[in-house]
Length: 237
Image (cartoon, rainbow, N blue to C red; front, top):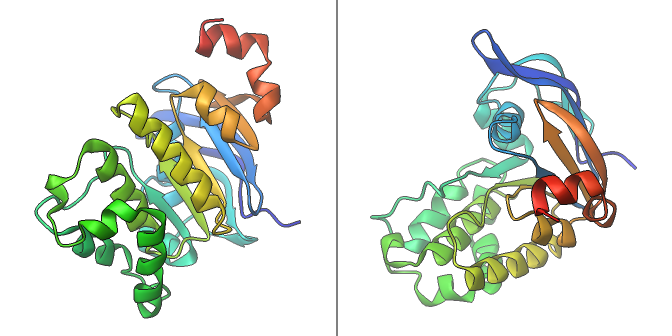
């Protein structure tokens, strides 16, 4: 089976500072794959490199078998790699519905905007109830749901989530992970960066652990949860 997303010996950084030192990973159709590691090891840089926001200095990136490294960010999004960034980055003065409409900006998504919006509202009923309210009136957890919904509006072939639970209350974290499981039912493979290691690995099919810009560990979610190095380093067990 062809990977939905694949990086091969990917290298990237900022100026003379190399952050990614040969990262290879695969995301297969229908999978949820977790990317975990301490702050500063290159997780967000990896997403930004795949998105075209950071230029790769070596290696390759393929989306459904087609090379996308070297493409401009809007071309990567049009190809189907869509990221919900850390920090939500919503237009707080605009309505919930207007924020969702912004997500359907590419030529592939725009003609199906109404249908996709109905799917997002079924996934996140609170957004449907408050569609005419400003995004600023939502709680932190609801704003994160809006950020994920906006990414879905772009009709992704691969969805990347960068720290979706950051700063959320525990009850909202649970609801958010339930929503991610629902997104999976839309047959969209998901690459997720998450500091909540136990919860994300309990949900993920597979995971990769980054250390110093390299893949240090990989395996199924269950295998990683049982790995003693990971348990002592990230779970404190």
